[in-house]
Image (tube, rainbow, N blue to C red; front, side, top):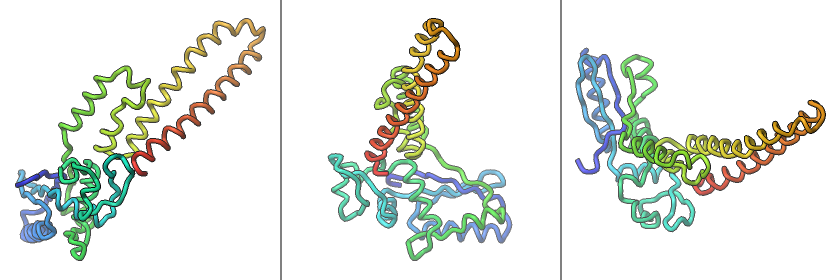
Length: 248
């Protein structure tokens, strides 16, 4: 099937009974009625329903959700609409236009939303409580994960000093913005410690010239407070710049 890729696996453990089989058949019908891609696989005593969507279906859900997407030429962000997809660049019709996390969010909207919003209206929480739905598996893109790891290993150790070279965009595309900002913060702290570490060595070598431990501790406390203030103020600026570039 064209541009087919399944993102979620729903595992049902009681499908062999008459009631379970009837309910599972109804769920599959409702997913297909919502224009979602469905693949049914029996695995031992369990049944796995793989769920995905075409790019056109993701676009429909993104427009309904008012998903913010980057305009071409880096001219800001705007809610995505299919009518104005040409404003979002040449990749608007390709599958990688939506990140992995965005596809999962949009797909879940299609699974749980009521039929009046072209959703399947599947009661996930109720099925989980009743033990009809035994597990939910997210089908990660292992090629993308391998690419992020390779990119990080290739840049080490220089990426700890230059936060712009970190694969934060790849992390954001695969997971989310908050996780990417966390890695950015860790890199920022390491960069800040690279300033503090040489100062501590120099101060340790010169502390005996101050005449007393109390005076040495007072001076070091002032240096540490100044370092904390500098690193904190710098991080606020870095975070705001990155968040603005992502439209969050």
